[in-house]
Length: 345
Ligand SMILES: *Cc1c(COP(=O)(O)O)cnc(C)c1O
Image 1 (tube, helix red, strand yellow):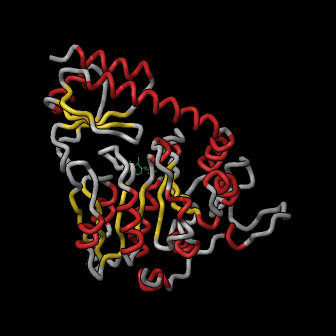
Image 2: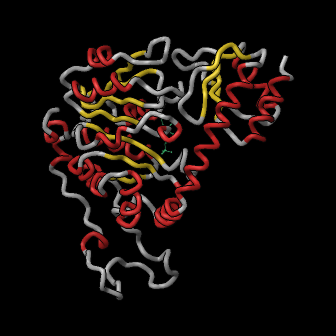
Image 3: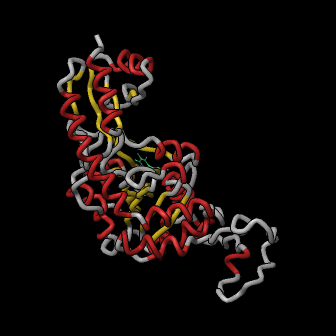
């Protein structure tokens, strides 16, 4: 890996971050807060939230088996994705490499930040070759984006290829594990100490059942986390979100129970879906959704919409012609989908 200073944009490396009232005062014993121009009434909403979400990170760290200083929290993983561009990629100069197809936000953030986005097609099994990705990289490539289990294909990427990218590439590797809870493959979080160039993304939006509160996690070396914290909005995670996330973590067995149920439902849905006349192929999934090749994705999508059932038509995406992406729902929702499709002619 190149030195972090060399990978970071010079203006960001030199940046002196905004110092908020809550940053400057760090003691605990005070009871009169006249430092932040807040309204003294309407407790607790009158107070600015902790800019570094310390209580929440203290709860999260043992669950994820990392140290609090290795955690960045943001307004969804999408904030972390945007921040890595802004921290490391000089607009119009640097570039990133990613697999294709994959999660759309990597490219959107590249475009917003005017960073060249180089994508490399997956093979017919929806796997990538590390050598192909590395061949697309050059001395101006700062980031490689990997997603495992991948969206929209649903499958885990081969661990050996992910490791090859991390150990061979001299920039930063962003590994998006939004769906790892649903996979039987271990997370790369336990490898964080071994790989200083690795940034793992996870989210409260999927297995944790909290898409509405907007909370994403990035895990990396303390040096990388410091850079992200330096450039984020001072109060990027609001009070309600921090509270709700802590409530959810107190009830972590619930999350594990949901995951178990959803994996069982995935198997049920895959089995019943494969038997439908309109299904041509189901792609293997390690996530809480699966991709299915159908006889006519547009027609079937429209048919389902008319019945009030919404799936995602991924036909326009590379390697996904006539593919629908189906999220695993409750047994009742899954049966409504299957019953509707049985009647499709
Ligand atoms: C859903 C999803 C996310 C989650 O994004 P949030 O902003 O945290 O809701 C991240 N990555 C991938 C690949 C996803 O599919």
